Length: 422
Image (cartoon, rainbow, N blue to C red):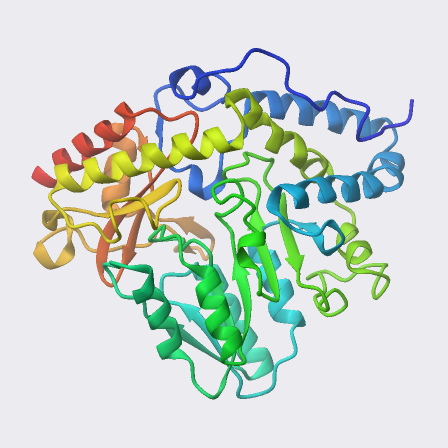
């Protein structure tokens, strides 16, 4: 029988499950590991991994059928379903490998003139800033950072920081829906409206938004384009992200890889960007529906947000630090970033700051360095949580998802205090 994306079950049988310890059994994570970093690369549930293996086996019965003849229409059907979850028009939504690729597509495609200024927030994702730097080299545009106040007390402060950065040369705003290092949920609708009034186009990096924000793409109404990852909170297979474009930009925004269907349609261009494994895209709707096991997305959002707010308050209190955003949860989703105690900051004798990014090793091959505090948390306490730096200070950014429970954040506080007192 020929492979079809609908030839396998698409629902998730079984009784409803409680989030927390019971849910953890559905993931293959090391049972000794306290995993508080779902916000980076996500974590795929074991049932979805098993379903992916079945899909890949079915594809291999006839790869031409599975990847091409059935894969392309299956991809379009999946994109339409995911677009509905995101609050987007399926005809102007498509899959892409990740949000960074989506931002590359936008910056490669949008018309800009030499000397045009492009703004990006100083708490944005470094990969996007690097894309802007390279775009500046290629297209002679001028990237510039918008400095947000930290701590942030009100959303009005955020909007004011952006509008104060606008100049008569600003043509494009690259806007984070949720800042990566500081985990702030920005008031993007107000910022987009202000930019539009100033004659500035906006593109939105919604890397963390799908699932965390209800109808995440719709929340960016007024932007030229939006992109977001599905491997984070929807727990999809890595390699599944979405790009959406506003009406009138379907023929302008092109995929980063041009293949056979140039200028045929937005969907045709993005649905086929060359030979690839279509499984992450075909199974994206299944990943989204997996949260039905926990009462559905509304229930998951309420629970995750409540836990984030409670853990945020507890950590600030136990570590004796000021919050970088309101403790009422008005600017947090499923993540929060907390400044580490003074004894762990370089200016007070703490270890020097270092990056966890890949850097060239002695032989020229890339090596991954770990911040000293990150290393202690991981090696001594078996806690996986990112330690990030901003403005020469060290912070920890924790995540909450259905497999987490309250005691894990108390364990994080205990570990930080032990390291700080050593």
